[in-house]
Length: 262
Ligand code: IPD
Ligand code: CA
Ligand code: CA
Image (cartoon, rainbow, N blue to C red; front, side, top):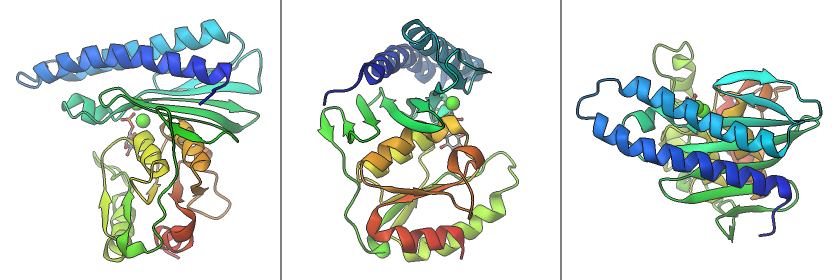
């Protein structure tokens, strides 16, 4: 895989943040015993990872804009390009010592995501894609699954937690989808859910109330692996409204119909 200069910058930043997060993750695993201060410790690890990414990216491309989970948005001198960053997707897993979390970095150009990197340092899996260039896991090309029957398919989603108001809607989604498929997984990191659809591990994904940094990188990776991506509502726009449905081409129509409840 011959990536562009921008993609290589993104990979370098993701690896640097990944090293820092892995080091802190070992400490979090120890903190599980006492639980004292684990939340604050994870917040610091998250902020430290974002700082590393920001330094790497802004040093290389000082004119680009910046949208990230842990800091204020910055409009770049070049208003057509911005980084969209989640330094740690899967925070709850990280806090609980579960090795399923990722660094997510996307590049947007004129409102379109043109490159994405989702890095899972615990498994050393680097998912990358650039518009028109295909998607890759480490050095291997990615392709969405070829399953054509819903009943054999596995879907990923996120479930609302902590008193979020959209629980009833999600329970209705599950009531429609679960009986029609081989299973639904909720692993707690939307960026990895999308990367796993790209890798053919899941056959599709849907979720509501996501933020742009949860999905920007994953969306270009799944598209470049041959997946279809649409908003959940007519006239919706996933990055703007946080609702998305994704699947391989064969099952997309029937899965999207179930996810939309129409
Ligand atoms: C969360 C994860 C999770 C999704 C949540 C997100 P965070 O991101 O992507 O899978 O269901 O909606 O907020 O908080 O771990 O960066
Ligand atoms: Ca996230
Ligand atoms: Ca996060």
